[in-house]
Image (tube, rainbow, N blue to C red; front, side, top):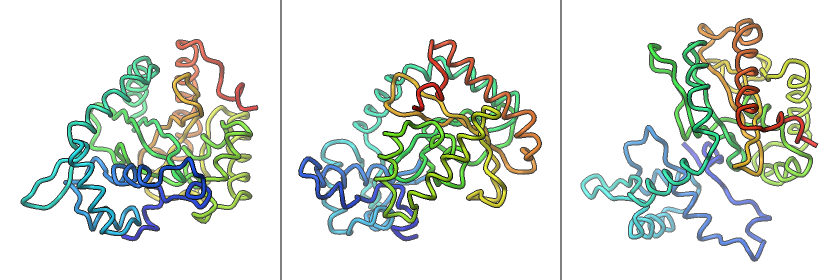
Length: 278
């Protein structure tokens, strides 16, 4: 696995490094923390270096510092790092501060159970969509995709729903983040237009089969904007193609997802995400 495979972890752009206000060392420390996945049984410095593109010697200094501060713990026997108590506390504080999650939990869990799909919340993380919360259907076999997983902006319904929901100013910032990672402004604009057209017509987004980033995952998504964040997020339902066909996405799961998100907006007193698109 190369740094290119993990460019969603947060490779610094030229504009960021040139800005005098930008603290590069802090950014690299955060890159190290963002390299971890829920499924990891700890990471060594070499693996962190491969995932982030940061030289191993620099990673060693960063992991040592993060360990001293309590954000990483170190199992000496295997020479691998895991999240420490400070990181767990920070995560709990962040989770508790997102007010709409408490209201969304029963709604999206019910949606997952009704449809037999994995409901999830995705946010933009550098140049990819990051899964930050999932609701697994009860009684269903273990379903793929976990918190911390990153998926492409283009080629995923989460990415298209996000792009379709951003304002012009927010979209300009997205274009600044991703040009070094093989996505042109034109490709992003085309994806944004395709997603917006679907949101207007049917209230949810599905990626055409020939444009999906993965053949073994089908998903349908909508955009959602809460007062907790300065930009929209994507709420999705996904499953394997044998469980979630295109017809089922379009005729059943998509409409249910759309209606559940509208219910969430009403419960929170929020306008539709498209009202704020601008």
